Length: 161
Length: 424
Image (cartoon, rainbow over all chains, first blue to last red; front, side):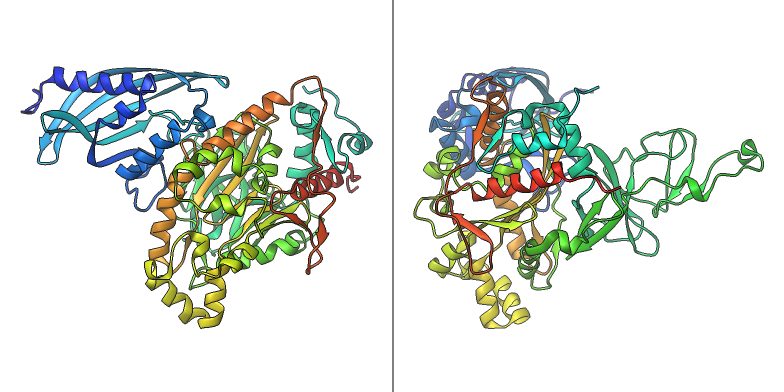
């Protein structure tokens, strides 16, 4: 099966995902936030949830709440990230799935190692992005993080996954 | 194996009126005692009837480390069954929920009704004339009762009734139900499960702790539009109440009555939820509806595991002495779709592992758990507001919004349960 026709190259997509992950890992919150389009959704569904308007989510942030989340992290008083967790995102299995009027839809798998006083926590799953070009820059308008253990009790996850 | 538990009289020494010993949070033997004398004895909240609306519906719930199937049988009755095959002990339900005519054990094919009765087993001739039946139903939580659809279970046959156990806390369940134009809470918006490395009592004590929000949640008060901070200030009119039976409440009504704005408690106004307000007035009349809309939803910790925090409901599940899961769902009200959408949106931002509020509470639980392992000082101090707490108009001991009246009330009840002689 060949990849669908896309105005973005696989290399461009990979570079975007790596950059996003690195900015999150390094706690460069403003730069991470600047990767979002104005019309944005950051969604980490709970297990079995297909409709975030009817079911609770781990994260369901539209653009304004993404800004609130970042602003809270930057206060220095977001205790669950003060001190920041040490984070390493590993991104793999990057694919361009489709492209339509809303943007280029990509899928990748991820593994995140998080270290803080609690100990070492591993997070894994699939991440789907919708990427759009705006004024020559690549931005994300949608990021969905599907945790492999969304159906289990999760530890605190206050970093940007 | 755990170390020998402190004898009953030791708990009188470990739990004083205004301070408690750190080992109560860290000693596995204490945890074992708590399971037997608290969790497997008193009424514990399990689930809500709205989670199993149809006959044959079931959900897997818990009482502490015990897995419990809450089911509705084919006659419509609710049961609390232990999630264990009566044959050789296999866990029965792996899925978190479902609808079925019979619960089937995948190990040897024994089947049970949703009422827990043994229905049958394959290859009957293997048992000869000795055919097991009536004595091999599923284990069950001994007593099951519900109030306003909130289902509770108790593992002992004798003891206070559910209504006696709820006591003054019952009023809070009435208030919650009253926020629905149809008088019914519906828990239909799904659950988050958030695990913390902390003792369950850290959570219970924090739920009606009015002292911490200004510090633990200062980051979100600083950047958000929330008015919650004022409720937990020195100037707040809210009170910390001991409702008896280990139940504690942060009574926010005085603060909201001062504000005197319908839906002020929810940080919004009537014109944003016109359909809901109209339905509530039609249901209760103008005056009563206004009172409900001003007073808002309660903030109450129903001992030992049901915490209703205005717009969401938490269930606390102890796993081990230093591991606890908080299950949380947005409150949803029958006949109030407009309100429900907003509630869901707000709750999604606040609670769970990434919640703008709860992630920081949970960070504190875990730091607290690490802290109390220190060798010295051995005690936690619960003295705040001792000099100013008084019985209120209803006879409940009440302190200021930031007082530790509630923590002392929780510990008095725990001490009573841990030192009580077990019934013969």
